[in-house]
Image 1 (cartoon, rainbow, N blue to C red):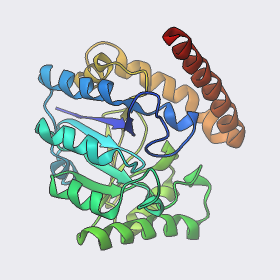
Image 2 (cartoon, one colour):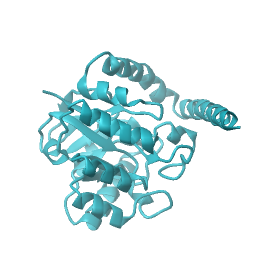
Image 3 (cartoon, rainbow, N blue to C red):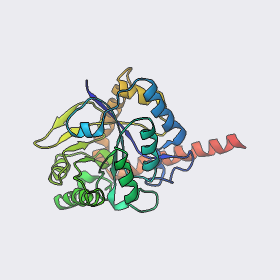
Length: 272
């Protein structure tokens, strides 16, 4: 049996997309409204999903479905509690420079999440726009500062992380390994695990704002073509993201902003 890892971000009240995590339309694209998120959890549970224990995954057991959350937005605590109430444990990856700032988790939030059985990992220190383009010194600083910060808060080794923006490279992996990371999650939609000398590299399937519970169930179970469709789309965009760089990010942000504004105006008109 393989491991299907689902990648979430923030969970917010519909329409209040900037309440948790990074602001703006590009970030909001990855945020679920609370009602939809709860429907995801309940739908996965009702479908008989076998949830993986994050500690077991970190120990090399790749079976079941693991729920992960990137960025470290303030909604992590509520998401963690909703999971705990359903007997589910997940992994929260934290942008450590944002701890204690508006819209992000506090140190106390992280301690509560850990006490509830969730695993805490690094999402780099500052969430660079493209971490793979940093020089060697900056790369090592991103991972080392993040790991050190979390270890000081939690009083335990931090050995799991996720790559911000999905910009994976051999240099990113080497720097993460040097900081003590032994399990590194990317944004590549795959159940395949690869290994370096000391670190396992695992992919994840992304859930977006418009993702219905049925999508989460399909990605978790592997039934239908949801996994293949996401893999194909990701591989088409991968070279464009890497080589177009800021141009791609600008065009994508503008497109999402226009779409977001249009949906917001439509919702407002429907209420009048």
